[in-house]
Image 1: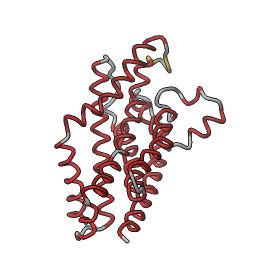
Image 2: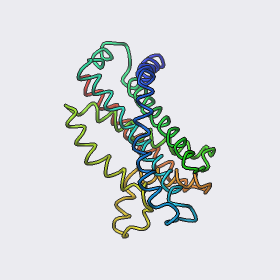
Image 3: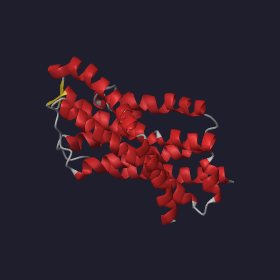
Image 4: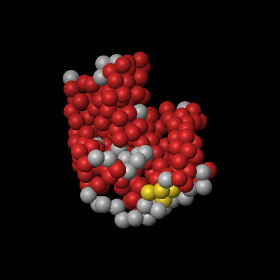
Length: 246
């Protein structure tokens, strides 16, 4: 299993390395626009728990970007399935389904971590330095990537076209990106809306990432919750790969 996992992961990393410059630029565009549009517009005019809005925004961008970049592995899988027929080669190769899923999920998590590094550099350009040295910060980022990379692999096995995936992204990933506590405090919403938003995994990831970035002690229930959701999605991805191979 280890060799199969390594082969799948290294393939994705080699593709990422080939596109690295373009990938970094694409990872930087949206966060940079948000920092310019919201950071400069809000500036010091709004503060949350003693932090400027820009300081509040950057952990939210970390959560959002790590989600979208981890989920973006589904696009690469779909291209490999529909155009290059790479998945058919994996079917013929002596690689277990678990090794395939694990390799793709880790590749998605790697993309998520790279996007976080890009945002941290952008934050430095805006003179924002937060507590990025806390291991719990990176654990929250990693678990967030694990959740959405696992979801991406499962979905990539189910969709029949890029249009299907785009529709799922529009109805699930995009709303979650804006409602998961990334751009505003969840507690500012009505009680009924808070209950709904607390069902989103990104909400818990955003909260844990922001608390650790601010040097606060995070609510530790967020970590086992994200791990459990990621485990469920990973198992579902494994089942979807089994069905796709059948």
